[in-house]
Image (cartoon, rainbow, N blue to C red; front, side, top):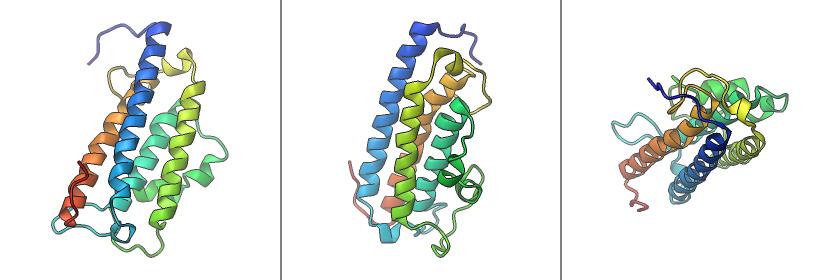
Length: 178
């Protein structure tokens, strides 16, 4: 539990800048892993593995939408095209990866959605004001139980899944990226 007082406006601004830098770093690392993974193997689950690359990418897209867009500015009409209910259900918390690529987005389409959510999320963060960032939110968050804590959690979440992508790659017999 965090018993610190909420940050002031100057601290919020500094924390937001740091979180955005971490979000960009985490995404660059994830992309380096994806770029080194053949797309024809994205729906393959390694022996005794719980997941595959496509699910990890879809999950990161859904989570980033929730943490960085929905919490900050609410649902917008265009969001249903970007993150439709079927997509949230397939990749949200508690979903189970399917190895059947039929009826699912291709790796290229998943990557387009993943990239579009990142781009739009950074735009939302650039426009976020202190009052919005200090609004309370439910878990998950890091540090503070508010939208800034949600923003701070996003790169932590992505690096956890980047680690899972790295393990999946190794389980597929691919060489490490780093």
